[in-house]
Length: 469
Image (cartoon, rainbow, N blue to C red; front, side):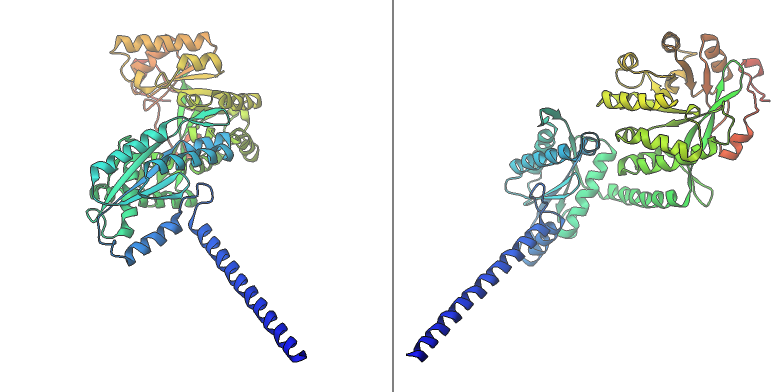
Protein backbone atom coordinates (compact mmCIF):
# COMPACT_ATOMS: atom_id res chain seq x y z
CA UNK A 1 0.00 0.00 0.00
CA UNK A 2 2.81 2.35 0.92
CA UNK A 3 4.58 1.65 -2.37
CA UNK A 4 1.35 2.16 -4.26
CA UNK A 5 0.67 5.48 -2.56
CA UNK A 6 4.28 6.60 -3.12
CA UNK A 7 4.02 5.70 -6.78
CA UNK A 8 0.73 7.51 -7.12
CA UNK A 9 2.14 10.58 -5.46
CA UNK A 10 5.19 10.42 -7.73
CA UNK A 11 2.92 10.22 -10.76
CA UNK A 12 0.89 13.24 -9.54
CA UNK A 13 4.08 15.17 -8.85
CA UNK A 14 5.49 14.30 -12.25
CA UNK A 15 2.25 15.28 -13.96
CA UNK A 16 2.13 18.62 -12.17
CA UNK A 17 5.78 19.17 -12.96
CA UNK A 18 5.06 18.45 -16.62
CA UNK A 19 2.15 20.90 -16.57
CA UNK A 20 4.38 23.54 -14.97
CA UNK A 21 7.00 23.01 -17.65
CA UNK A 22 4.37 23.28 -20.39
CA UNK A 23 3.04 26.49 -18.85
CA UNK A 24 6.58 27.83 -18.63
CA UNK A 25 7.25 27.01 -22.28
CA UNK A 26 3.95 28.61 -23.32
CA UNK A 27 4.75 31.69 -21.23
CA UNK A 28 8.17 31.98 -22.81
CA UNK A 29 6.69 31.52 -26.28
CA UNK A 30 4.16 34.30 -25.64
CA UNK A 31 6.93 36.53 -24.30
CA UNK A 32 9.06 35.83 -27.36
CA UNK A 33 6.12 36.55 -29.64
CA UNK A 34 5.47 39.79 -27.74
CA UNK A 35 9.11 40.81 -28.03
CA UNK A 36 9.10 39.97 -31.73
CA UNK A 37 5.90 41.94 -32.23
CA UNK A 38 7.27 44.94 -30.32
CA UNK A 39 10.51 44.86 -32.30
CA UNK A 40 8.62 44.83 -35.59
CA UNK A 41 5.98 47.47 -34.75
CA UNK A 42 5.83 51.15 -33.93
CA UNK A 43 4.51 51.42 -30.35
CA UNK A 44 2.75 54.73 -31.06
CA UNK A 45 0.75 54.02 -34.22
CA UNK A 46 0.79 50.19 -33.86
CA UNK A 47 1.87 49.97 -37.49
CA UNK A 48 4.75 47.73 -38.60
CA UNK A 49 8.08 49.61 -38.57
CA UNK A 50 11.25 49.24 -40.66
CA UNK A 51 12.02 45.91 -38.99
CA UNK A 52 8.51 44.74 -39.88
CA UNK A 53 9.02 45.96 -43.44
CA UNK A 54 12.28 44.03 -43.71
CA UNK A 55 10.56 40.89 -42.42
CA UNK A 56 7.71 41.34 -44.90
CA UNK A 57 10.17 41.76 -47.78
CA UNK A 58 11.93 38.56 -46.74
CA UNK A 59 8.59 36.71 -46.64
CA UNK A 60 7.73 37.99 -50.11
CA UNK A 61 11.10 36.98 -51.48
CA UNK A 62 10.66 33.50 -50.05
CA UNK A 63 7.21 33.15 -51.62
CA UNK A 64 6.04 33.02 -55.20
CA UNK A 65 4.81 36.63 -54.93
CA UNK A 66 8.30 38.09 -55.27
CA UNK A 67 8.13 38.09 -59.06
CA UNK A 68 4.68 39.61 -59.32
CA UNK A 69 4.12 43.35 -59.98
CA UNK A 70 4.02 45.59 -56.92
CA UNK A 71 3.22 49.25 -56.32
CA UNK A 72 4.66 51.33 -53.50
CA UNK A 73 4.48 54.85 -52.13
CA UNK A 74 6.19 56.89 -49.43
CA UNK A 75 4.03 59.47 -47.62
CA UNK A 76 6.09 62.29 -46.13
CA UNK A 77 4.06 64.42 -43.69
CA UNK A 78 4.95 68.13 -43.69
CA UNK A 79 4.41 70.44 -40.72
CA UNK A 80 4.61 67.74 -38.06
CA UNK A 81 8.06 68.74 -36.80
CA UNK A 82 6.98 72.35 -36.42
CA UNK A 83 3.97 71.30 -34.32
CA UNK A 84 6.17 68.97 -32.28
CA UNK A 85 8.62 71.80 -31.50
CA UNK A 86 6.00 74.43 -30.75
CA UNK A 87 3.22 72.50 -29.02
CA UNK A 88 5.14 69.56 -27.60
CA UNK A 89 5.47 65.82 -28.14
CA UNK A 90 2.03 65.05 -26.76
CA UNK A 91 0.27 66.99 -29.52
CA UNK A 92 2.68 65.59 -32.10
CA UNK A 93 2.02 62.01 -30.99
CA UNK A 94 -1.75 62.49 -31.18
CA UNK A 95 -1.43 63.88 -34.69
CA UNK A 96 0.68 60.91 -35.84
CA UNK A 97 -1.87 58.46 -34.40
CA UNK A 98 -4.65 60.34 -36.18
CA UNK A 99 -2.76 60.28 -39.48
CA UNK A 100 -2.05 56.55 -39.11
CA UNK A 101 -5.78 55.89 -38.55
CA UNK A 102 -6.67 57.89 -41.67
CA UNK A 103 -4.14 55.94 -43.72
CA UNK A 104 -5.55 52.64 -42.44
CA UNK A 105 -8.96 53.65 -43.78
CA UNK A 106 -7.46 54.40 -47.19
CA UNK A 107 -5.03 51.51 -47.63
CA UNK A 108 -7.37 48.74 -46.50
CA UNK A 109 -5.95 45.88 -48.56
CA UNK A 110 -2.39 47.16 -48.63
CA UNK A 111 0.75 46.75 -46.59
CA UNK A 112 1.16 49.86 -44.41
CA UNK A 113 4.26 50.77 -42.39
CA UNK A 114 5.64 53.68 -40.41
CA UNK A 115 9.22 54.23 -41.54
CA UNK A 116 9.94 56.56 -38.63
CA UNK A 117 9.49 60.22 -37.79
CA UNK A 118 6.88 61.62 -40.16
CA UNK A 119 7.20 59.07 -43.01
CA UNK A 120 4.84 56.21 -43.88
CA UNK A 121 5.13 53.50 -46.52
CA UNK A 122 2.33 51.69 -48.35
CA UNK A 123 2.67 48.80 -50.78
CA UNK A 124 0.29 46.64 -52.81
CA UNK A 125 0.56 43.61 -55.05
CA UNK A 126 -0.75 44.72 -58.43
CA UNK A 127 -0.12 46.95 -61.43
CA UNK A 128 -3.14 49.29 -61.65
CA UNK A 129 -1.26 52.60 -61.57
CA UNK A 130 -4.40 54.75 -61.98
CA UNK A 131 -6.00 53.20 -58.91
CA UNK A 132 -2.75 53.71 -57.00
CA UNK A 133 -2.67 57.38 -58.02
CA UNK A 134 -6.26 57.78 -56.78
CA UNK A 135 -5.28 56.35 -53.41
CA UNK A 136 -2.30 58.72 -53.27
CA UNK A 137 -4.44 61.79 -53.98
CA UNK A 138 -6.98 60.62 -51.43
CA UNK A 139 -4.17 60.28 -48.88
CA UNK A 140 -2.97 63.84 -49.57
CA UNK A 141 -6.51 65.15 -49.16
CA UNK A 142 -7.24 63.19 -45.98
CA UNK A 143 -3.95 64.14 -44.31
CA UNK A 144 -4.58 67.82 -45.09
CA UNK A 145 -7.90 67.80 -43.24
CA UNK A 146 -7.66 69.69 -39.89
CA UNK A 147 -6.85 67.46 -36.90
CA UNK A 148 -8.51 68.19 -33.54
CA UNK A 149 -6.26 67.62 -30.52
CA UNK A 150 -7.14 68.96 -27.07
CA UNK A 151 -9.72 71.41 -28.43
CA UNK A 152 -7.25 72.84 -30.96
CA UNK A 153 -7.13 72.25 -34.70
CA UNK A 154 -3.83 71.49 -36.40
CA UNK A 155 -3.05 71.31 -40.10
CA UNK A 156 -0.37 69.33 -41.87
CA UNK A 157 0.22 68.36 -45.50
CA UNK A 158 2.02 65.58 -47.33
CA UNK A 159 4.31 64.84 -50.25
CA UNK A 160 4.00 61.46 -51.93
CA UNK A 161 6.47 59.50 -54.04
CA UNK A 162 5.54 56.32 -55.89
CA UNK A 163 7.38 53.48 -57.62
CA UNK A 164 6.60 50.26 -59.51
CA UNK A 165 8.14 46.83 -59.59
CA UNK A 166 9.52 45.60 -61.93
CA UNK A 167 9.28 48.79 -64.05
CA UNK A 168 11.38 50.96 -61.69
CA UNK A 169 13.04 48.61 -59.23
CA UNK A 170 15.27 45.64 -59.87
CA UNK A 171 13.72 43.80 -56.92
CA UNK A 172 11.17 44.22 -54.13
CA UNK A 173 13.82 45.43 -51.67
CA UNK A 174 14.92 48.20 -54.04
CA UNK A 175 11.31 49.38 -54.42
CA UNK A 176 11.42 51.42 -51.19
CA UNK A 177 14.54 53.28 -52.32
CA UNK A 178 12.83 54.24 -55.56
CA UNK A 179 9.76 55.54 -53.71
CA UNK A 180 12.01 57.53 -51.35
CA UNK A 181 13.75 59.06 -54.36
CA UNK A 182 10.38 60.05 -55.82
CA UNK A 183 9.18 61.71 -52.61
CA UNK A 184 12.47 63.63 -52.35
CA UNK A 185 11.80 64.94 -55.85
CA UNK A 186 8.27 65.99 -54.85
CA UNK A 187 9.65 67.86 -51.83
CA UNK A 188 12.29 69.69 -53.84
CA UNK A 189 9.67 70.78 -56.37
CA UNK A 190 7.08 71.52 -53.64
CA UNK A 191 4.66 69.43 -55.68
CA UNK A 192 1.29 68.65 -54.11
CA UNK A 193 0.75 66.03 -56.82
CA UNK A 194 2.06 62.49 -56.17
CA UNK A 195 5.22 61.85 -58.20
CA UNK A 196 6.38 58.65 -59.84
CA UNK A 197 9.99 57.53 -59.66
CA UNK A 198 12.12 58.94 -62.49
CA UNK A 199 15.60 57.44 -63.13
CA UNK A 200 16.89 60.82 -64.32
CA UNK A 201 15.68 62.43 -61.11
CA UNK A 202 17.26 59.60 -59.15
CA UNK A 203 20.64 60.72 -60.43
CA UNK A 204 19.86 64.18 -59.09
CA UNK A 205 18.86 62.58 -55.80
CA UNK A 206 22.22 60.82 -55.64
CA UNK A 207 23.99 64.15 -56.19
CA UNK A 208 21.71 65.69 -53.58
CA UNK A 209 22.65 62.97 -51.08
CA UNK A 210 26.34 63.48 -51.84
CA UNK A 211 26.03 67.23 -51.32
CA UNK A 212 24.28 66.54 -48.02
CA UNK A 213 27.20 64.37 -46.93
CA UNK A 214 29.71 67.03 -48.01
CA UNK A 215 27.84 69.78 -46.17
CA UNK A 216 27.89 67.83 -42.91
CA UNK A 217 31.64 67.36 -43.27
CA UNK A 218 32.10 71.04 -44.23
CA UNK A 219 30.34 72.20 -41.06
CA UNK A 220 32.74 70.16 -38.96
CA UNK A 221 35.86 71.24 -40.88
CA UNK A 222 34.97 74.94 -40.89
CA UNK A 223 34.62 75.30 -44.65
CA UNK A 224 31.24 77.03 -44.15
CA UNK A 225 31.87 80.44 -42.63
CA UNK A 226 30.16 83.82 -42.38
CA UNK A 227 31.13 86.49 -44.89
CA UNK A 228 30.14 90.10 -44.30
CA UNK A 229 28.43 92.61 -46.57
CA UNK A 230 28.60 96.22 -45.32
CA UNK A 231 25.50 98.28 -44.55
CA UNK A 232 26.13 101.94 -45.46
CA UNK A 233 24.66 105.11 -44.01
CA UNK A 234 23.30 106.83 -47.15
CA UNK A 235 23.97 110.29 -45.73
CA UNK A 236 27.54 109.95 -44.45
CA UNK A 237 28.66 107.04 -46.64
CA UNK A 238 30.14 105.30 -43.57
CA UNK A 239 29.72 101.67 -42.57
CA UNK A 240 27.17 101.23 -39.78
CA UNK A 241 27.17 97.45 -39.73
CA UNK A 242 27.64 94.18 -41.60
CA UNK A 243 25.17 91.50 -42.57
CA UNK A 244 26.53 87.99 -42.00
CA UNK A 245 25.99 85.76 -45.04
CA UNK A 246 26.78 82.05 -45.30
CA UNK A 247 29.56 81.08 -47.69
CA UNK A 248 30.91 77.60 -48.40
CA UNK A 249 34.43 77.68 -49.79
CA UNK A 250 35.83 74.26 -50.58
CA UNK A 251 39.47 73.38 -50.04
CA UNK A 252 40.13 73.72 -53.78
CA UNK A 253 38.99 77.36 -53.61
CA UNK A 254 35.63 76.91 -55.36
CA UNK A 255 32.39 78.15 -53.80
CA UNK A 256 29.12 76.26 -53.48
CA UNK A 257 26.21 78.67 -54.24
CA UNK A 258 24.27 79.59 -51.05
CA UNK A 259 21.01 78.90 -52.90
CA UNK A 260 22.06 75.23 -53.10
CA UNK A 261 23.37 74.44 -49.65
CA UNK A 262 21.00 76.65 -47.62
CA UNK A 263 17.99 75.09 -49.35
CA UNK A 264 19.53 71.69 -48.71
CA UNK A 265 20.03 72.52 -45.02
CA UNK A 266 16.40 73.61 -44.69
CA UNK A 267 15.07 70.46 -46.35
CA UNK A 268 17.26 68.05 -44.38
CA UNK A 269 16.79 69.73 -41.01
CA UNK A 270 20.42 70.91 -40.84
CA UNK A 271 19.52 74.60 -40.90
CA UNK A 272 19.60 74.82 -37.11
CA UNK A 273 23.12 73.41 -36.89
CA UNK A 274 24.27 75.54 -39.83
CA UNK A 275 22.89 78.73 -38.29
CA UNK A 276 24.36 77.93 -34.87
CA UNK A 277 27.84 77.47 -36.37
CA UNK A 278 27.59 80.68 -38.40
CA UNK A 279 26.10 82.73 -35.58
CA UNK A 280 28.75 81.73 -33.06
CA UNK A 281 31.57 82.57 -35.46
CA UNK A 282 29.90 85.83 -36.53
CA UNK A 283 29.62 86.89 -32.88
CA UNK A 284 33.32 86.17 -32.33
CA UNK A 285 34.23 88.28 -35.37
CA UNK A 286 31.86 91.13 -34.48
CA UNK A 287 33.14 91.28 -30.89
CA UNK A 288 36.39 92.70 -32.37
CA UNK A 289 34.58 95.57 -34.11
CA UNK A 290 33.94 99.01 -32.60
CA UNK A 291 30.80 99.05 -30.43
CA UNK A 292 29.01 101.33 -32.91
CA UNK A 293 29.25 98.72 -35.71
CA UNK A 294 26.30 96.34 -35.73
CA UNK A 295 26.11 92.67 -36.74
CA UNK A 296 23.00 91.74 -38.73
CA UNK A 297 22.09 88.06 -38.76
CA UNK A 298 19.26 86.27 -40.62
CA UNK A 299 17.14 83.87 -38.60
CA UNK A 300 15.32 81.01 -40.33
CA UNK A 301 11.73 80.03 -39.50
CA UNK A 302 12.99 76.62 -38.36
CA UNK A 303 15.19 78.26 -35.70
CA UNK A 304 12.49 80.57 -34.46
CA UNK A 305 10.07 77.70 -34.01
CA UNK A 306 12.05 76.56 -30.95
CA UNK A 307 10.91 78.04 -27.65
CA UNK A 308 14.50 78.08 -26.38
CA UNK A 309 15.85 80.01 -29.37
CA UNK A 310 16.00 83.42 -27.67
CA UNK A 311 17.70 82.05 -24.56
CA UNK A 312 20.32 80.19 -26.63
CA UNK A 313 21.04 83.30 -28.67
CA UNK A 314 21.62 85.39 -25.54
CA UNK A 315 23.85 82.66 -24.09
CA UNK A 316 25.97 82.74 -27.25
CA UNK A 317 26.32 86.51 -26.98
CA UNK A 318 27.54 86.15 -23.40
CA UNK A 319 30.02 83.40 -24.34
CA UNK A 320 31.52 85.32 -27.27
CA UNK A 321 31.56 88.73 -25.58
CA UNK A 322 29.36 90.51 -28.13
CA UNK A 323 27.06 93.14 -26.67
CA UNK A 324 23.34 92.53 -27.34
CA UNK A 325 23.11 96.15 -28.48
CA UNK A 326 25.46 95.29 -31.36
CA UNK A 327 23.23 92.51 -32.65
CA UNK A 328 20.41 92.93 -35.13
CA UNK A 329 18.42 89.88 -36.19
CA UNK A 330 16.48 89.82 -39.45
CA UNK A 331 13.15 88.01 -39.63
CA UNK A 332 10.97 87.37 -42.66
CA UNK A 333 7.22 87.95 -42.54
CA UNK A 334 6.49 84.25 -43.07
CA UNK A 335 7.61 83.56 -39.50
CA UNK A 336 4.52 85.25 -38.10
CA UNK A 337 1.93 83.25 -39.99
CA UNK A 338 1.53 80.21 -37.72
CA UNK A 339 2.09 81.41 -34.16
CA UNK A 340 2.22 85.16 -33.69
CA UNK A 341 2.03 84.92 -29.90
CA UNK A 342 5.12 82.73 -29.60
CA UNK A 343 7.13 84.91 -31.99
CA UNK A 344 6.01 88.06 -30.20
CA UNK A 345 7.06 86.67 -26.81
CA UNK A 346 10.54 85.74 -28.08
CA UNK A 347 10.97 89.11 -29.79
CA UNK A 348 10.13 90.94 -26.59
CA UNK A 349 12.63 88.79 -24.70
CA UNK A 350 15.37 89.69 -27.17
CA UNK A 351 14.40 93.36 -27.33
CA UNK A 352 14.42 93.50 -23.55
CA UNK A 353 18.05 92.34 -23.61
CA UNK A 354 18.94 95.10 -26.12
CA UNK A 355 18.87 93.14 -29.40
CA UNK A 356 17.55 95.07 -32.42
CA UNK A 357 14.89 93.49 -34.65
CA UNK A 358 14.58 94.04 -38.40
CA UNK A 359 11.85 92.77 -40.72
CA UNK A 360 13.45 91.42 -43.89
CA UNK A 361 12.09 91.24 -47.46
CA UNK A 362 9.29 93.61 -46.49
CA UNK A 363 6.33 93.57 -48.84
CA UNK A 364 7.01 90.11 -50.27
CA UNK A 365 5.47 88.01 -47.48
CA UNK A 366 2.20 87.80 -45.58
CA UNK A 367 0.06 90.33 -43.75
CA UNK A 368 2.77 92.99 -43.63
CA UNK A 369 0.73 95.85 -42.19
CA UNK A 370 -1.03 93.52 -39.77
CA UNK A 371 2.26 92.32 -38.30
CA UNK A 372 3.72 95.82 -38.13
CA UNK A 373 0.73 96.95 -36.09
CA UNK A 374 1.05 94.05 -33.62
CA UNK A 375 4.82 93.68 -33.26
CA UNK A 376 7.63 96.14 -32.67
CA UNK A 377 10.56 96.38 -35.06
CA UNK A 378 13.61 98.63 -35.21
CA UNK A 379 14.29 98.45 -38.91
CA UNK A 380 12.39 97.81 -42.13
CA UNK A 381 14.37 96.22 -44.95
CA UNK A 382 13.19 96.99 -48.49
CA UNK A 383 13.56 93.94 -50.70
CA UNK A 384 15.89 94.02 -53.71
CA UNK A 385 12.96 93.18 -56.03
CA UNK A 386 11.63 96.71 -55.47
CA UNK A 387 15.04 98.43 -55.60
CA UNK A 388 16.17 96.88 -58.87
CA UNK A 389 13.59 98.65 -61.05
CA UNK A 390 12.13 101.57 -59.09
CA UNK A 391 14.00 104.21 -61.13
CA UNK A 392 12.26 103.04 -64.31
CA UNK A 393 8.94 101.95 -62.83
CA UNK A 394 6.68 104.63 -61.38
CA UNK A 395 4.61 102.11 -59.44
CA UNK A 396 7.67 100.57 -57.85
CA UNK A 397 8.89 104.05 -56.94
CA UNK A 398 5.55 104.82 -55.26
CA UNK A 399 5.77 101.59 -53.27
CA UNK A 400 9.27 102.45 -52.05
CA UNK A 401 8.14 105.95 -51.03
CA UNK A 402 5.26 104.37 -49.13
CA UNK A 403 7.60 101.95 -47.35
CA UNK A 404 10.01 104.69 -46.34
CA UNK A 405 7.10 106.84 -45.14
CA UNK A 406 5.66 103.91 -43.21
CA UNK A 407 8.98 103.25 -41.53
CA UNK A 408 9.34 106.91 -40.62
CA UNK A 409 5.83 107.02 -39.20
CA UNK A 410 6.44 103.94 -37.03
CA UNK A 411 9.81 105.17 -35.81
CA UNK A 412 11.85 102.58 -37.75
CA UNK A 413 14.98 103.02 -39.79
CA UNK A 414 14.78 101.81 -43.39
CA UNK A 415 17.47 100.02 -45.35
CA UNK A 416 17.36 99.11 -49.04
CA UNK A 417 19.16 95.99 -50.25
CA UNK A 418 20.34 95.15 -53.73
CA UNK A 419 21.71 98.60 -54.59
CA UNK A 420 23.94 98.26 -57.65
CA UNK A 421 23.95 101.78 -59.15
CA UNK A 422 24.97 105.11 -57.68
CA UNK A 423 21.76 106.69 -59.00
CA UNK A 424 19.73 104.22 -56.94
CA UNK A 425 21.64 105.12 -53.76
CA UNK A 426 21.31 108.84 -54.42
CA UNK A 427 17.56 108.67 -55.08
CA UNK A 428 16.93 106.47 -52.04
CA UNK A 429 18.83 108.93 -49.87
CA UNK A 430 16.77 111.83 -51.22
CA UNK A 431 13.58 109.86 -50.48
CA UNK A 432 14.62 109.51 -46.86
CA UNK A 433 15.99 105.95 -46.78
CA UNK A 434 18.57 105.72 -44.00
CA UNK A 435 20.84 102.87 -45.09
CA UNK A 436 21.80 100.88 -48.16
CA UNK A 437 23.41 97.59 -49.02
CA UNK A 438 24.48 96.02 -52.29
CA UNK A 439 27.19 95.40 -54.86
CA UNK A 440 27.63 99.14 -55.40
CA UNK A 441 29.38 99.26 -52.05
CA UNK A 442 30.79 95.76 -51.69
CA UNK A 443 30.11 92.08 -52.02
CA UNK A 444 30.24 89.89 -48.93
CA UNK A 445 33.87 89.52 -47.80
CA UNK A 446 35.77 87.44 -45.22
CA UNK A 447 36.09 88.72 -41.64
CA UNK A 448 39.66 90.02 -42.07
CA UNK A 449 38.71 92.09 -45.13
CA UNK A 450 35.56 93.38 -43.43
CA UNK A 451 37.60 94.68 -40.48
CA UNK A 452 39.92 96.55 -42.86
CA UNK A 453 36.93 98.30 -44.51
CA UNK A 454 35.69 100.01 -41.33
CA UNK A 455 37.41 103.33 -42.09
CA UNK A 456 36.19 103.53 -45.69
CA UNK A 457 33.62 106.06 -46.89
CA UNK A 458 31.39 105.68 -49.96
CA UNK A 459 30.01 108.74 -51.77
CA UNK A 460 26.35 108.32 -52.68
CA UNK A 461 26.18 111.09 -55.28
CA UNK A 462 26.19 109.79 -58.84
CA UNK A 463 28.93 112.11 -60.04
CA UNK A 464 31.32 110.72 -57.43
CA UNK A 465 30.21 107.12 -57.49
CA UNK A 466 33.25 105.72 -59.21
CA UNK A 467 35.62 106.21 -56.27
CA UNK A 468 35.71 105.03 -52.69
CA UNK A 469 37.97 106.52 -50.07
